[in-house]
Image (tube, rainbow, N blue to C red):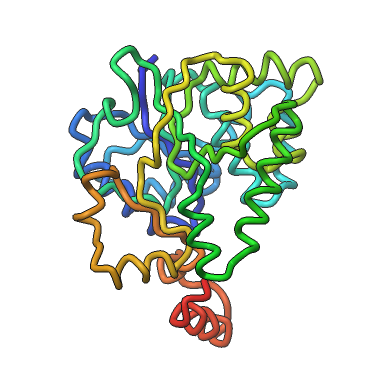
Length: 295
């Protein structure tokens, strides 16, 4: 079993984004860390075709679910794509391919050389994203998007109540995140198994996989908590990207602090595969909202 690996769950709609991510991994992966990508079994041939020549190990999502005890695959199939992928990403550790993994989304891009030391301490303890998201909350209030603050608070309160933790609301993100198998095992042994639950049941209860991991780490202390800030510069919204550009900040500036950048697929729809979805009117509407900074 490897100590550390990169992992991304993807779908055909994100094919172009995944190829871009894989190319950036190829360019900056100085330690040749293994890179695993899982997709629906039916989509494996498509990804094999477009990833030719890139160092990517493809896995079927179904194989991850088969390795997960108590998972009802029909239950996962009934879930929305956003919820189902949370189950698959969080159960990847059961494949036994690595002890710790950097869980990436397809819209990530590396912008500089990276290695294990960016994600783990010398003793093998991974860094855990932990802050209170004040920067995002301040930006949201400045943009008069109070709903972002309300959603953050409600999401945090929901999972904290499950674990019976009172106190400050933490953000255990944004993605990509470093996850250790021991934390997932502790959640399974101390919370899910006693309640005869699977992780799919947990996601249906509270669909925020990063909070399940973070609160489990605080509750069961399977590993030492080594807090860190975001590993990637994340543009949650297009207006944040526009704000950076107006300030004259580009990827070269961010490489001092971050390994990469996240461009949210919700406003980067031109990267959809095989083409941007919707009719001409919906496409025009998205472009207008994008131009006005409303995405």
